Image 1 (cartoon, rainbow, N blue to C red):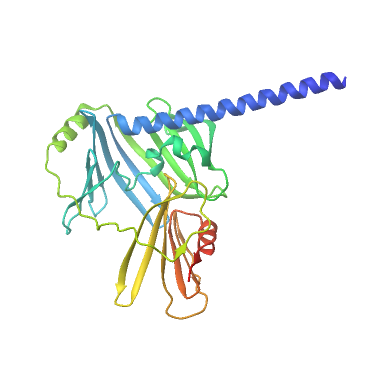
Image 2 (cartoon, rainbow, N blue to C red):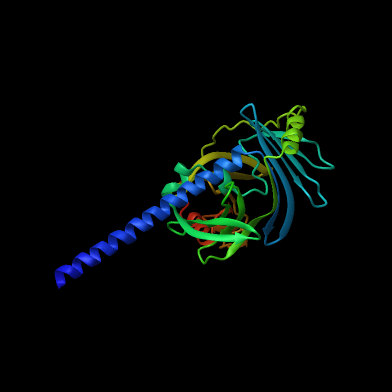
Length: 316
């Protein structure tokens, strides 16, 4: 009897393990298909971007012409801000300001960064879970959860169009599964000749000149971060003067999905200063250590920002 019970339990555990493995593989495939659809198909989508302090209506068009991505994003509120991408050049147009261009791979303003994340780069730090099917309006959607393995960063819930694999809704959530920000599609025009024709015309216009960024001399700091969430790497550092006697030293870190900066200045007065601010995905945390003010700014949970700030060590 015990022998047969052991066999049944072992068989059951193997079935559960295989189901979990298949669920993860299915979620990973869906995630790749969503990124491929968003970056290679021709479409126009209208969506709303929700955050704690703003609701932004947006129209976004995208196509690929001669292997070159061409996109246009227009904020449909009073600002009428427009962003145009042609290849690796992204240009910004806003009433009352001079237009300019920057180098970049994708328009990320108002679009969730998860759309352009590299799977192999983020895979070690997230669990991909197939959460089944649902409906948004009359559209069937597949649900994928992308969960931080160690709760050191935020997670995502993706609702993906079952037919064309474009995103229909993307929720950014914290460790308590509370929604911090939401991307929600209102309508999609798919493979429209009108969309392609409008972007073909857009691709022929001359874009404003590239904005020159200051030379990165990679300055040497007398401090270093002792604890980073797994997968985060330093991608740049800089220093700039705030006043004649006030200098800020900054280092920027990214895991390929989220970014944050560490900023260090001299404290004017001694004593501990702690000032946490959380607004959606953006956290600002400030503390004083050895007459230095440390400020963490970026896309981190507050608890992680505190750990990073506390780990910074100064050399004499």
